[in-house]
Amino acid sequence: MKKIIILFIVLFTISVFAQPEDSTLVDGWNPFGVVGLNLSQVAFKNWTQGGSNSLAFVAYTNIGAAYLSHPWKWKNMLKASFGRTNIEDDYRTTDNEIYFESILSRKIGWAVDPYFAVTVRTPITKGYDYSTDPTTQIVDFFDPGYITEALGFLYEPSEYFSSRLGIAIQQTFADQFAARYSDDPETLDEIEKFKFETGLESVTAAKYPFMENMQYSTFLRLFTRFNSLDVWDVRWDNIITAKVNKYINVNFAVTLIHEISQTRKTQLKEALQIGIVYTLF
View 1: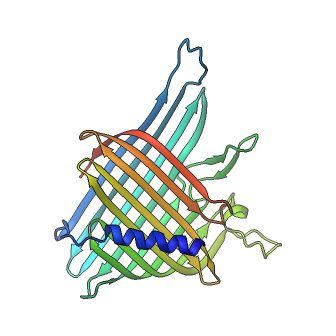
View 2: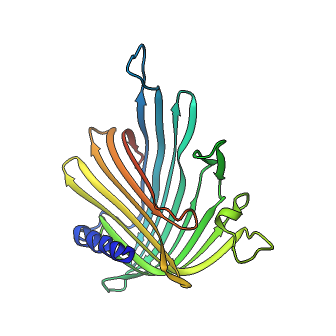
View 3: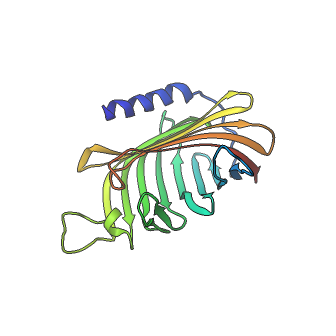
């Protein structure tokens, strides 16, 4: 059933977003960059119907540069987000991630282009499990950290859609939390702080402007290991952005994660926020 759902997601995304369109890239470096701050706030005074003061924020950045020199293209992207929620002076971390991606591809006259990609994922700082009492720290910077190298073929018919599939090598690094993320349960005499895995990686990203001031963006990453091809790591990010003016956006975001090295339960995060955004390039 999970394989059918994943296949449906990929086919649906391709059918909706694969619209041929001329690229806006020019020869040489093409920088891009956006920084923003999403806010949600509630305050009470002399309120008789109950409630708690709260403030939530997510600061984020999406910067990078693409270098175009026919037939080569080298695209680099760095995304980072950090968010906290304060409810009656109780602070909790809600977003905590760095994602870096570098892709080198070459046009060869086919419908798909060969590529080599490197991705790096890590928390920015300490993160906690708030379901325990007392709260338990479960992550820190590069604890865990993931580095993935992939070689395969890239389909990119327009600036609004890209999809790639390749043979991948994934390394997992951990230190204080190695027992949770990188340890091999079959070796009982030691806790490994490094895990090496080979498999297949698929990454699909798309943007769909469906109204004059609204856009849907989606990002789907799948990874499976050769020794367990029936098990997939899934990360699916979705965001609908409504542009109020040059600097104000309203965002509705949904993220789904299924990664059994973290938990066997499917993770789901949803957020509706008003955002302040500034375009650097």
